[in-house]
Image 1 (tube, one colour):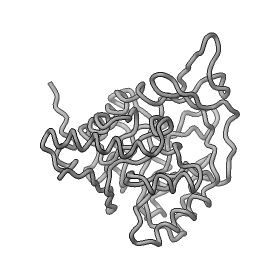
Image 2 (cartoon, one colour):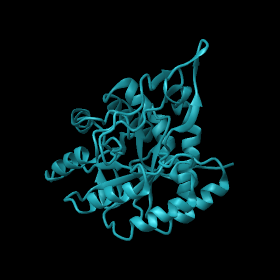
Image 3 (cartoon, helix red, strand yellow):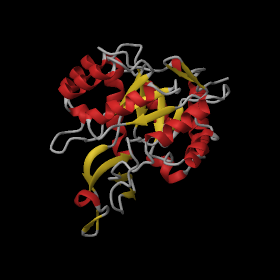
Image 4 (cartoon, helix red, strand yellow):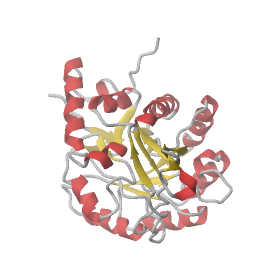
Length: 310
C-alpha cells in the first residue's frame, strides 16, 4: 500500500496535495469544493485587513505553457476567511487548513497577525512575503533587512503555527542569505514559490492582461525548474523542523514526485487546478501513487529530499 500522507509541524494530512493560494479559494463554496476533494488540505485566498476588488480585468490569461496574472490581491477580507477556518476547526474530524494573509504595510500585517493570535483559530497560517506592499520597494522577501525585521517583530507576540510564502530566488547567495534569516525563527514551513514576477505575454501585437501594461506573474510549466531549484535549495539550507511546501508547474503525478524528491513535504497545485478543476487532485494522486509503487516507495518520506546529483 502506498500512502501520500504527510506532516507539517504537528499537523497530519491524508494527502500531500492541496491548492495554491489564489486558486479556487476566493469563496467558502470554492474552499468547500477543495475540502470535499481528494486534496489533503486547502489554503485560503490571501486575506488583507479589508475586502479588496483587485486589479481591473482582464487580469488572468491562460497560455500554452501556463498562465500570466496580475490579480491585485482580490479577496473578501481576513475576517471572512478566519471565521470560516475557525468554524471548520470545531469539527474534530475535519482536515487541518492553511489561512493565508498579508498586510498592505508592515503595520497592517501585524494588525492582521494579532487578530489571528487573539482568535480561537489554532491552525496553520501562511504569511505571504511575496507581495509588494511599499510603492517603490521590492516585495518583502527580496528585502532581507525588511524580512528579518518583520519576522522578528511578528514572533515577539505570535505564538501559533506560522509559515511564509516566498517568491522565487535566482542567486545562490540569496538562498544562503534568506535561509540564514528563516533559521533564526520558529517557522513551521516555507512555501516555494509564488509566480515569477513581471513576465510579459503577447497575443498578435497586444498584451493579454490589462494591469501594469501587461506585466504579470508567470505560472505553470514555465516555472517548474525554478520552483524545484528553490525547493531543493531551501531543503538543503533550512533547519529540518522547517518543512517545505513545493509550488510551481505541478500538473501531473511526475511533477509532484519531483517536488517531493527535491524536499517538499506538501505540494500545491495552481495554474493546472484553475484549468482542470478540483478533480485534478484525484488524478495527480493516482499518478503519484503509481510512480511510488513502481519504484517500491510506500510513503513520501521514503524518497523526500533524495535527489541524486552527478
